[in-house]
Structures are given as structure tokens and as C-alpha cells.
Amino acid sequence: MRSLNGSARALVDVAAGEISREIFVNPDIYREEQERVFARAWLYVGHESQIRNPGDFTVSRMGEESVILTRDRAARIHVFLNSCRHRGMKVCRYDDGNTRSFICPYHAWSYDLDGRLVGVQDYDNSYRPPFDKSQWGLVEAAQLANFRGTIWATWDRNAPEFDDFLGGARFALDLGLRPWDGSDGETEVLGSTQKWIVPSNWKFIAENFAGDALHVVSHRSVDMVGIGPSKGPGRRDDYGKPYLAAYPGGHGVNYGVTPPVKERKNYAGSPATQAYFQRCWEKRVARMGDKAGIVPLIGTIFPNMSFHLQQPRTILVSHPRGPCETEMWRVYLVDKDAPDEVKRYLRSYYIRYSGPAGMTEQDDMENWSYATTASRGPIARRHPYNYKSCLGSEAGRSDLIPGFVTERNTTEQNPRMLYKRWAEYMDADDWRALVPAASDAPP
Amino acid sequence: MTGPELTPSRLSYLSLLREVEDLFYAEADLLDERRYDRWLDLFTEDVVYWMPMRKNVAWEERERDITAEDDVAWIHDDKEMLRKRVQQLLTGIHWAEEPLSRVSHLITNVRIVDPVTALAEGDAMSVKCRFFVYRNRLETETDTLVGRREDTLRRVAGELRVARRKIVIEQSVLLAKNLTVFL
Image 1 (cartoon, rainbow over the protein chains, first blue to last red):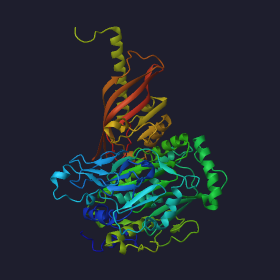
Image 2: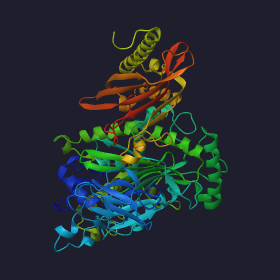
Image 3: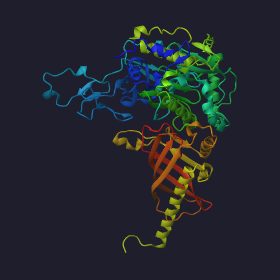
Image 4: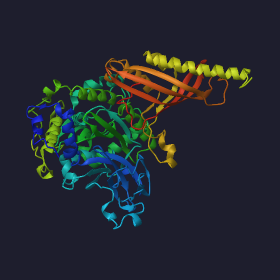
């Protein structure tokens, strides 16, 4: 592997809040990123609700590579590289479904749901001495984690446990992936995955969700028109007081905190949804007391899993396809036990907000793609980007929320933390150099 | 004489087909000439404007290759949302369409699906067509959106109006970065 030889840190001057444009466009850096970030970090693969029964599968991606998320006959979940061990053909070319095995269309090698190679054409005659089929199963992720229904995997057996990888950001996922009532009940993916291509470097997308309250101007038009779930201007209900928290693992989360009031008039555009939300809210307050109103609104789990977990409620994975191209995969989440009418209303709200036709996200794609294009030129590359907002003046500790927390939501501390961690991945030769996270102070 | 005779019912059918084509071509002009307010008038107040997604599924499940109505879609709007999309375009600060894209709608393969030769006030019929939409924006950014449309047209106050539109694009992973163009 070619190495930047510790030079990634030179491209990411977090102390000065300056980041080189190179990291968004340079093909060598991109190739190294695939090895040093995407082959190492825990990556979001999918959701348990997409593979409820044995034999259910859904394809996903980890970095540039296609993977299969499936459930074997013993109901165990697996993540496999979607590539035949013989000549590499994809063994699964369907987006989802149910199967008894994965059969390669090229030379008919077949694999059981647990990844074992079970069928090789003319095995008995053509392979003398026979090769050991047990060594030629589908390539499986080194580690797998199921966190409140979300499935994560890493190719690196030396990666820390998923909980340690999350660090303080565990708090956000743990809260946000529970049903609205704050119980241990199930949240599920609402149907199919939106997939689309954006001519952008993946990091512009990751940093946007990690914490960029300054880009409100991008969404003025949708705020004027009003697409929120309670009608009127704006695009969501009041989420209370904003907080930003950065985590040494490179993760960034925007929280909202509402006092535990009795009644909240959210989702007023749909009486059924409003009533369901209010019922859940009352249970949540009874269960969680003063902490009921802490909600992770928006965030990024390093490197490329981003979320809205309140309004809308959705997971976006920004799969890299090249330095200047990203494949966006977006799914929407609902409480499994919510009434159908509520799910219908939420679906309608979610997709008018997010996705390529989403009246909010449309404008984001315009920014990310043209920011990428404008990073390319040799003159442009001489001039770093400015991440100086609230540099050196933020981030303390909070009783409410773990991490480096600030009420100044105009800060760019979260993107700074993300890039600091990015540079650590790029410069470290293995996980030993990454654990514990070297970023131990707010940037 | 070969082919169908020009009976009164045949003439009535051809006239109706021509009326449908006129509607679609006029609609294309309204969109491409950016007369969005006028375009909205072509839809009934109870219109469902639906653009499902496409999936790669096994042959025996091929009916799933278009996502169902209760699934996530690219777009699933009512008249109110269509109005809001138009309002957003007209704010002048909807950056995805500011400056506006250059768009041409080509509508073809227009076919009345139902065995009707005339449409009375309040009645509806199902119509299919293909669309080929070329979008070019800023300098070189270009999208080609191609697919099938299934419209339910209803006669309202003497005019044909779109009461339901299903837009089936021939892409699974959408190759355009966003969908800001009406189809």
C-alpha cells in the first residue's frame, strides 16, 4: 500500500481550521482512503428488519464493494463480499429477496446462506487432488454488530468492539434508534432503499450531516414554502434547544433538547400521527423523565453513515465510487408498532424532505457536487478550505449529553473532529495506532 | 380499403386520441417554457402524482420491479405538494434550479388503454405514453430521464385533466443527482 507517510495530518490543519482541497479530489488519496478508512472502520450495512426470515437477503455496499446481508437457516446474520471466489462474478444481482443459496451465474459455484462453498461444477472429476472447499467460502466480514436493529460490519479483525468504535456517539444511536416512546421496542426500515449518484466527494456529505448549522441559507426556499409535518412554514416541528457534540471517533451529532412538557403539538398535519406521537411522548416522559426531550436530530457516524433521527427519520450512507462520485443509499425508519396511517403520513413527509426529489436535499446535492468540481483546479488546490467557525472557543462537557458539547451551533467543531480523525486513519498503519482515539481534546 | 373504416366511432376515437396528444404536448411546452403556474392547472385537485422506484428482483418476483404504492417512492405527491414544488422553483433561491435548468420533454407512444371512443364530463380513462426528458444545467451537467407514464385523464369542465400520474423511470440507481424536473 502506498502511504502518505504521515502527511495526511499536514493536509488537515485542525488547529488552524484549514483543510486542503486535495483530500476531496486527489485520486491517490482516494485510493488510500479505501484501504485505510473503508477497509478498517465499522460501516453501516443494513437493518435487521430487511432480513426478518432465514434466506432473506438484501445487497449493500461497504466502500466501493458490493456485499450481501443475509440470514442463514439458524437465523444468524452474515455480511459477505458479493463476489465468487472462482472468478469474481457477483453471486447476487438482486436488490433483495429470499433464497436457499447464492449461485454464481458464471461457472455455477454455489454457496450456502452461511457462506460455505457447497457446489463446484465437476468437482469430483476435475479437481484431483480435490481442493478444500471449506477454505473457499464467500469472504465474510471480520466482525459484525447488531445495534438496536442496525447491522454494522468491518473487514478488520483488529478493529475495536463496535461500542468502543462509537464511543460517546453510542448515546445518540441508542436514543435515536428506539421507538418514539423510548422503550426497547423495534424500529423498522420503511420499504425500499433510495439509491442515486451524486458527483461529489463523500466527505462533503459526511461533514454536512456531522454538524453544519451554517448551511441554513441553502434551505431558505423550502423553509419559505413549508413542508413540515404540522403545515405552515419551515420543514420540521420545534426540536427545542440545539446542542452540538463532537466525538473523538470522528462522529458528530446535532441534538435538540425539549423540556419534559405535558403536551407537544408535533405532526399537527395528521390527527392520527399527532395522537400517536403524543401517546409515545407521555410514555417517554414517564420512562425517561427530564431526559425524555433529548433527541439526536442529525449526525454522522464516521466515516459515511449519516442520519436524521427525529424529523425526518432516516439513514443515509454515502458510498464512495471515486474521488468525485458518491452513491447515496437512503432508508427511512418508523416505529414498527406505529399504526399504518401514521407510517403512511411519515413516508409522505420523509420523501418530500429527503432523497433526490426531496425539497430539502435537492439543494444539498447542488452544493456538494459543485463544491467538488471547484476543488479540482491546480490554482484552487493551492487554497485550503476554512473551518474556523468558533475555533478554540467551544466545547465543554454537559450533564445531558456526552462528548464535547456546545450550545453554539454555528461552530464547525464537528467537521474539524471528523477530519482530525480522518487524518489519524490515513496516517495510522493499523488499529493499534488508532485505539484509543488519538483525538482526546476538542479541535 | 384496408384497415379500419372511418366510421363515426373511429373518428371519435381519433379525435379523442388527438385531444390527449394535444394535452401532453401543451403540457411539455408549459414545462419547458417554465410556465409552472399554468402547468398546475392541468391537474385535478385530487391528483396523485407518483413516481415509484425500480428494483432488481428475481424473474419469479418481477412484479416487484416497480415499488408498490405503499413503499417508499421517488415522489408521491398530492396537488398541494405539486403547488409547493412550483412555489419553491419560483422563490429564485431554490439553488438546485437557480439558475433554471434547460429542459426538453419529448412525449411519444401515446395510447389510450381503455376501449373508449369518447369521454363524457366527469368520466376518466387510462392513457400510456413514453417520456424522454433532456436536462442540461449550468455548463455541462446533463441528465437524460427516460421512462413510461401511465396517466388517468378525467374530463373536467369540458377539458381533459390529469387525475393520476404514474411515472416509471428506467433506472434503478437514479443517475441524476436530483429530481427537480417534472415528468
